[in-house]
Length: 601
Image (cartoon, rainbow, N blue to C red; front, side, top):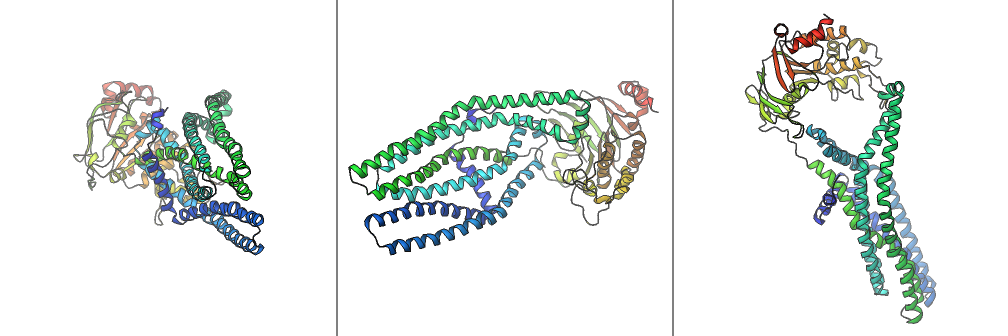
């Protein structure tokens, strides 16, 4: 949980954050930004002209016997102004805002998504940073709305301040004292209340995430079967949902009394009591006793007090609202300002021919608390060599290949390619030369072809050969639209949902389609039946004749044909060799083989 100190922003920071979002709005749509300002000037200025100057002019004309012709001309002018004002408002709210607001949201979300795509994977391992990331993305649209509201408040406040302020100074300068008392009191109280609300939001945000998780469990199809077969899980989810709601209620209850008192002070003491009580008595005294005001001015000043009070409330809300807006924008700016640590140090171009890959005393830890996951690992991979990584869960196999793909960098040691530290190569080029299938691969709500290419499909792209090699082709033939068939029913009611084995074959097809020098497979056949696994192994052998292959598999029948097998345990390589040599050694690998693969061969 963030401390109060971390939630405080300096005046400079508040202005910088507000200016960042304001500039983004004007960059994305200058038309919207400009018309927004004029809309707020129109709205507040027209209220002043109509409700203060207009009523005052008519009442004074009646009180002091001015010619009716002057009143008529003024009314015609006012009606014309109202007609033009209504037309402008309709164009802005119904046309300009509808067209331009999506552009502004698109620009901000594009910045966020672009940054998210370049984040270090380590950021997702840090719960605090991930919470900040989720808050930044989820509050992006609200931050735009808050900034638009803030701009409107600023413009309206200034128009009200100068128009009504000038009018009140000319009519009765003492009225300014009532304005100042209300402004200062409301400003201080609102500052405290907004910080309490922000702190409350930070407390509730992790709880809302848990509540949303329970919500997803009950509506996503992936959980439907298990929920029906395991009723206790459903009960547990209901209890979690109820407990989370209680905690949210408790958080809100803890702050509700403070917020109620603060709202009472701002809504009554520094508003209604001052203006409707003390100020009204003062105006009556000035008109009836001192004869310092005409009755027309008394009526106008009193009636205008309501508009002035609302305008002053806007001004008093402006600084704390700016702070609240800036606090959320700060999350977005911190997220966008994150400097990626896994970067190209020298931007060297990748060599045309991939030679030896060498791990030299490589160690790695996800964090200091948990210690090293990989310990002083050293080995090499010759060009076109097929390497199998085996070991029990948690041995460090997947972490090792993540280091090779530069999803992380070693905390100690280095990885060399053609004798050059891989950190010196251009990162995008380096990763483009690696084809990968993770055990937690994803199928996207897109067409079959797009899921293979992992991009927009160019006109000349032919994904069918890759689908043949992966074993997906028989399923493809049953699809009415072939490679243009939409997958999942996220957006398409007629979309196709694949089985686990079909999804894995489709994911493997990505490797066959991609022209790469290295292939990394993390449990590529875990969801396949033995026959499909055998066919995949044959296809993989043909497709990777001139490539280096590293694969992880708990099915040792898959690893027996590897050129070399590395057995990992607790982040260290404990055995290395061919299948036959490791069986002959009768070590840990042989024990795994005898316990598993010998049952099937």
